[in-house]
Length: 315
Image (cartoon, rainbow, N blue to C red; front, side):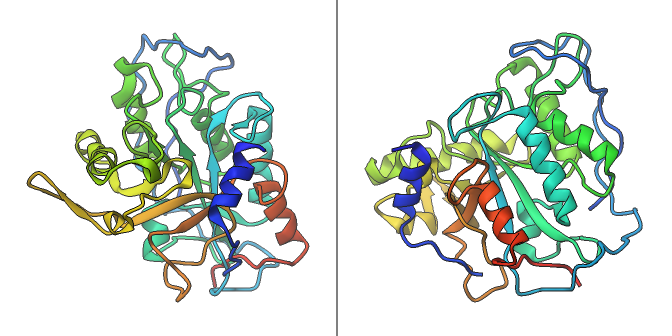
């Protein structure tokens, strides 16, 4: 049984509920290196804006009761597991999402309902778990690796300015490696409209931990992400497993600090309702794992094209 299948079983019953313009950032190089160290600092990006004309995405009637796709990525590299999406496949995902009328938003926008979409567009939240090096990587010459996740997204955005390089990274303390350039990586993500959020400290199975250990795992990133003005109040559950004491997801005290979670995200397995829907549960927000097979991203995009699932479409 694959890890993805385990996640599906853990989730139980599947519920079918249900732009901004970026300034040109760092030069994107034409070669890659897994552990390259930047010697020339990358320019701090200018924050994304909403100044592009919001031309209607054609042939898409409004549907404010539709579902939202939250795509979940791990490694952006060649491989056969459901945790790996090749650079080629990721580029194909972006092309398909774009042609189907999707445009990226972040978690804050998703929760608020203020999507800032052109008329006729659908929101997609691009999420990356675990802070793997293949997601955000610099080369030795200081350029952004064109085959890392953020490099691919930025290059696609330059060709399609109405598809901002906006993504949400649920991180572990390693923060993609290359510690000397950690701050610059965060600047790129946030400057392009993305967010840095909580994936615990050690990626442990919270369902097997006592309450105090759960508090350490969830509460630790609040201090870690404070220096980056991150969003530790958004938590992606490791393995998609909640703690036995689910009241901890509502909030708890850790020393003198009040820890409060505004949104908790699962692993898999279907589109999510809008945050304004009566079906929305802020402590159980489903995502779609970017993989082939049942309940993967390819499956759900096929379902959409076959008219079996209706996405939110901006009026």
